[in-house]
Length: 343
Image 1 (tube, rainbow, N blue to C red):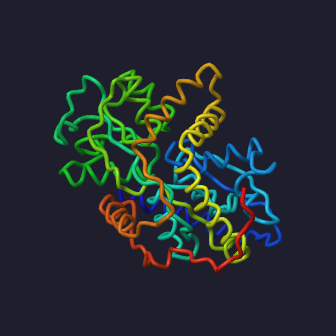
Image 2: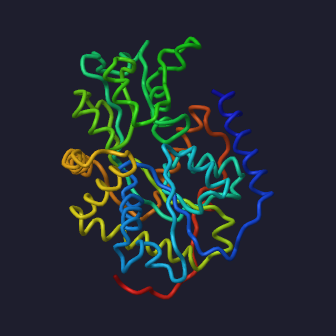
Image 3: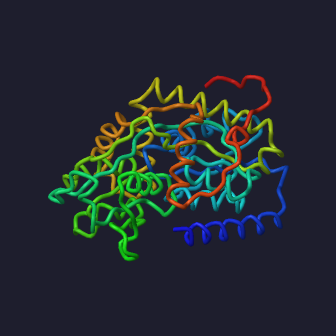
């Protein structure tokens, strides 16, 4: 695992060197935003859908709230890829899980990543396949567990949980079980085929596995930090007023979603169908899936420092994270800005 950590650090440090050679366009008025096709990225999916359909006075949510700026959206499967994009200046801000954000913050010695806000807690779970006869941690010996990507939040949670329960991986190296990084969209097929015995993932994939395969939730952490809003320092320094408006827009969007859950769910369903290239006849199924997944999540705009500290401990216990600079320095505090026009 230490070898894996060293490889990840080498890759990210190489990316940082390349980034430092690039030129920051301080005059750009396009804010490039990242998110994942997960319900736990609800603010990102709702805003992305509003942007595609231009429902906010002919604009997207963020560009309607940020004077003089427009928005562009990028989509990633999991956190490590999103952080590479942040380092590579492909995106300026992104919704992402806490573990990849913390790893990027640590690798850059605290210089490159800042947290703007919290987004979602909960919505992740460890499921075991129907008929697997897995009821306790000891039953995972000799079994395979899928996670979205090596080093992503669910991957770290899975590995830390195994360690806390006296289990080791990889199986090929003489460990007790195998953790197999697998894109969320592939997990259903692999579980159906019996290629994996369990899966630690996020919504809507948790509910999808339950509905489609009869998988059962073994571990669920409803209060754990699942999604935060992160940005790169270079963009924040060059666009402080826009950054302040981004935070205010995110907070306002979070409140709107909580006050209009049915409308928000329709935005999420529509955007997930678009991102997964699903047929229109699947819309009712998507909407039901998202409705069921909604109950597992708690929306927030507050950064949970205690929750982040636990992820630091988990990452260090797995060997995927080394020294992390003080977390308080990771929080971005914007200068006060005048209010923007209401919708």
